[in-house]
Image 1: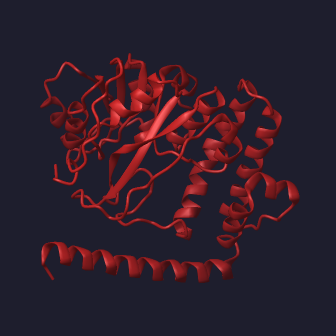
Image 2: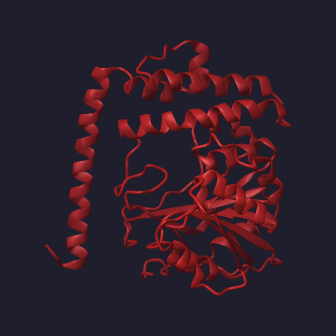
Length: 343
């Protein structure tokens, strides 16, 4: 653990302690999972239950887990790899806490994270989330931290366009997590699904300023993010995310009629418009700007979808992105040289 991880301490919870279940599916993360486990067991102000499911790792991940002889850890292991969604569902089956948090086995949870989020829920929120600090594989910051805002059921129309909250910082109260589980097998983005189901069932997800998740980027992240900070203008990443979201859209659309909210028919239409536009873009076809489509997708999303669909626009956009990445990489390299004194 680096000094950076412990640089910022947040207040210890003064609200009545409640049980937080942290779900951690893992696969071939022997190099990272030890630090992830330590960062959770070091949390204070809450009663911790860490549920780890090894998804058939072929390296020494299970041996690293077994080094932790701590009664707060509940563990299970699949004999063969079944995928992250199956591992998440098994984690939730084993979890007994009042609050449900997720933590990837290659990330590090900053001090005060569980206490601050559970305090917000105890005070009346349906869920809580906080900052993310992107770092390289050695936990050196790559940029400023990613911040956010409160999300409410009134934001469902916007949330149907894109995932607003990373799973690593999302903590819903158990009653708002239950509608999301078991996770549908078609999901690629479990954090998006959990956020949508919590909001659809009445949760207000509060932004808590202070604690943070140390998000380790090492080239093999499940989100597709690379070892650098991809700007939203990366056309290849945008297409990849659109493609993997299609299965999630199918699951979302199937669930909408059962939501206890008004305007389910309108929300289903918005989700279908976004899914169909994503399919057209992934297939290399333009999306046309009808008034209904612009309302469903939003002008910015419609423009992005077409910029990666029209070959000429994408070619110029890719050149711009590569220039941005080159400048960003040069700045990061100079910053490292300045910190370490090494050429």
